[in-house]
Length: 595
Image 1 (cartoon, helix red, strand yellow):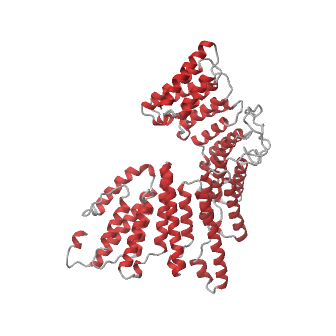
Image 2 (cartoon, helix red, strand yellow):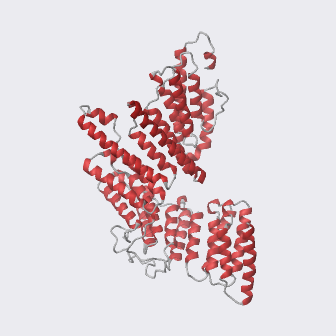
Image 3 (cartoon, rainbow, N blue to C red):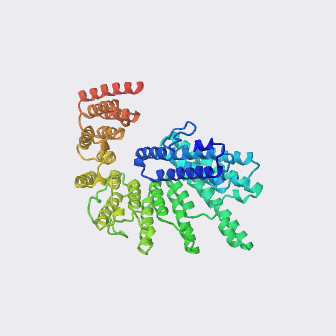
């Protein structure tokens, strides 16, 4: 391609077509690489390098840029730059748009920045050539950059670090700045090409949904959605006074759709606010009402809508106003099949009050009813049921753990009947074990032990989806640390020893972490057994060794040292044991001051 460029008598038009085809090919390659399984990313990149070498045999490097993990988008951008240097410079806005979209599809922290850089190149090209229409940035150009910033925010959220969350917020703010620019330019010049549409506003909503921000995002998302609704009402009025109603409907619509509402629901679900469940459920109800009144399928709630609302309810954790606190030990839940179950409206579902857990159950029932009535899109899946069980686990309401386990058993029965989309996994079991840990029930430890044994049995029978992991054992440790059963601290320590043995034998999925050690030390601090100060210190030393050997997740923190000191302070026994506990406390406190 480069050799032909250097020929004086070359024909520019065929060469232009070659570049355009190559750009299109690399952009499609970028989309393909993102749609593949992320677990195969390294092998995909190797494949792309080989493919790139084959496609561009005489041009393996573009301006010194080697083929990287974002090689497809990078090569497309390089070719776009080369296309601009041809004699006829036949670049078109659509060429810029497709390359911007290639960067948007990479879903990396650089997605937004790279797409906006290309937009700047497009604007420069448009301004430097007496504003030719074929290079005028259009709505698709700006919408694509907004999409890129949204995916950049998603990339930051997936990494789950504080600095990345900040990047996610900046990315969402960048997306909104572009929206504001489009609004200003449209108002100033009445340029229909820059009038924000439903895709524009929804893409900004998605950027906030992807940002991971918990304080600013809900308010901004609500405000943007309300703005869309106001603009839609204005458009409806214009449509009524216009003879070209179809044109208004097709070209000017900003009417919020299912994706827009789902984005706002997702923002609330991820916020963890106490009102998140109520806000999300209100949005779902609004969607259903509009759909029922108008029959407009574009705003019809879908599986994502319901799952997101259930997730929001689980995270909000609003307690029931009618159920009794379970901070004490329940004596009547046990494992009786009839306790609390006889009032259920559905198999394995018990109404426990009007808090988040009860409302999550009610949303599940609505989903199941819609699916039973023939709406195949409303079919609950394992994500749905896991979210409901999670709401129960976090509620700490009386009977919640038993209700969660009833749902789990129901899922096992449904899976045995052939419903593969509700197959329980390790996360499902972990949620129920956590529910028993939060229950305060006198039978909690026994139920949790039984569930862990079921997981082990299923795993040994070939079901790798329910293999016990660190979360499983940590939840079990929490159960034992909260029970009043005799020798509960010794039992917790034996579970930790099992985790260490499994890990040292090569099973990294049960690697003990700081939570594991801290929970056992806490169990000893609350026990009435002799020698608990010595036990707590011994575990602290083992934790320190574990951390020094390379387990960065087992680093002792202030809470660990404070828990050891607590074990010393509340030591039982004779004077000799209390004096030894005091010596341990003095030593540990000194270490804490130096750390």
